Amino acid sequence: MRYAMIMAGGAGTRLWPMSRANNPKQLLDFIESPSEPGVRRSLLELAARRLEGIVAPERRYICTGEQYRDAIRQKLSDFTDERILGEPVGRDTVNAVGFAAAVFQKLDPDAVFAVLTADHLIKPDSEFQRCVDVGFRLVEEDPTRFVTFAIKPTYPATGFGYVECGAPIPDGDANLSHMVERFVEKPDLPRAAAYVQSGHFYWNAGMFVFHAGTFLDCLKRFKPESHAGLMKIQMAWGTSNQRSVIDEVYPTLPKISVDYAVMEPASKDPSVSIALVKMALDWLDVGSWPSYAETLQADKSGNRVSGPADAVLLGGKNNLVVSQAGSGDSRHTIAMLGCENLIVVHTEDATLIMPRERAQELKDLHGQVRPDLR
Image (cartoon, rainbow, N blue to C red):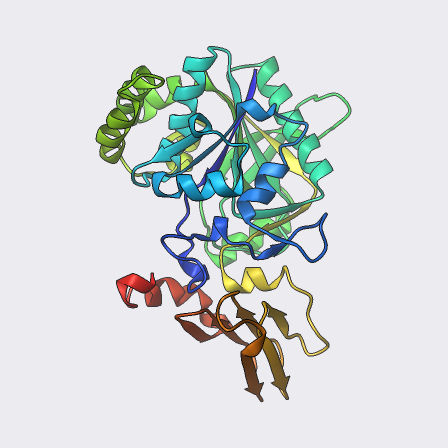
């Protein structure tokens, strides 16, 4: 049967000061819902809605920090406790995927599952659902396949992984599927530009479809330390010892991404075939304030404003102004005179001001603020 796991464990430090340790970016109600004008939803809520019609509600899971369990239950009441895979600490994506695979295999030896993300905006939903269905069918036809999803690059990004498109795979009427030639992690700018120009490389969307048993077999060969720990968790799943075993074992797992730990070695292993499914849709990684700005309508000067506070901008251009509910609401005014390319984010207890081009350094600044503000 088909299962799905949404990874929702990111800290979101590049969206500080709105994203905090106790309320990370995937739980912030700061994205306007495509189907509900004027209503703001969290990235996690939007990700969960995209699963409609692909996977039955009772087989949808979220992998997240255990500390976010209550907040997720309040926002997404359909996700019962047993369908929230709570990590006591983050151990990167290979263990999140392995955690899901271990649980799904115990529930269903033939489980095929999609790994999806909670920090991307994707539209239209109908095209996303079509592509994910193709991915499921590819693995259901051949359980030794791994499927990754690929986005046509719009610029030579150096912060994304790339996947090279190979020979086509018959997939009915979709014509979306190809073999993967190779993965490349975060190339430098000249290589990224060459990849985009070639037309053969796509951004790796960080979403996958696996047969649970095949993934665990590969994990046993490529990262046996993770496999051994996850098998202990699998044995304890559904028993009275479940939480204590997770809390004891999970922090000991080696911290590494699924791309480095499994996908790259699997691409060189003849017992596994890796396919990609092209996604011809709008895809935005909302991981920083400049990317969040792309979700907002710009005025004639390129300024973008979000939130309840009043914003007055004169003689400036290409600024982003964000305020958070509870930070003064409509009684508060943010006024900017002659400013260009600035990002201003105002919350109840912190205000961020930075040049747009230095947004990638926000993670460093985050480490220097008071611990109670992180």
